[in-house]
Amino acid sequence: MVKYSDWVANIVLIPKKDGKVRMCVDYRDLNKASPKDNFPLPHIDTLLDNTAGHSLFSFMDGFSGYNQIKIHPEDMEKTTFLTMWGTFCYKVMPFALKNAGATYQRAMVTLFHDMMHKEIEVYVDDMIAKSRTAKEHIQVLRKLFLRLRKFQLKLNPAKYTFGAKSRKLLGFVVSEKGIEIDPGKVKAIQELSPSRTQKEV
Image 1 (cartoon, helix red, strand yellow):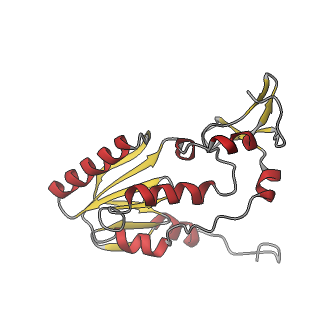
Image 2 (spheres, rainbow, N blue to C red):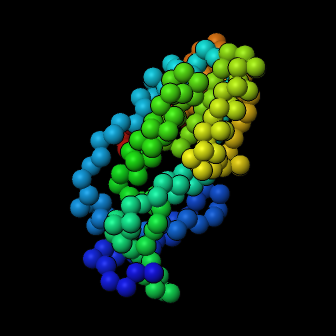
């Protein structure tokens, strides 16, 4: 609980696709005052090229990904938010911060630098283990899980696929054959009705 803070934000409730509600904190003022962290996110074309051509894939998702990164004690009070029970601050990185994505990607690159672009690909909190044989895939997963355990990172048990031969990835389908366009996206364009008004065009 925080008693006096220069930074105080309000709570906003945002409906999710699954019908649940996500509590968000309105950090617009803090984000305006924060310098931009230009740590690069992976290039999607490079990630697709590095993933395609393998025969087995496992797709995993970090559990409340950003919340697994601890905030420096001096910066905690900057995340202060109001509730009807008092003012509180985060001890872990919340989702609404301007540089949360870059900070998380930097952490993943630091922790998995020796595995990235060889055995795994990481796009913020999405992880892809890849291999050419089943035996190699088990070794890659074992190495990945040991690393996750070492740094106490958690995966979302509701969002994973192990040992897939192909899968949709960032709007494409990757497999041993290479990169293909997602048939669902092609179908949506084929079934698109012709524009009838100037506004539709």
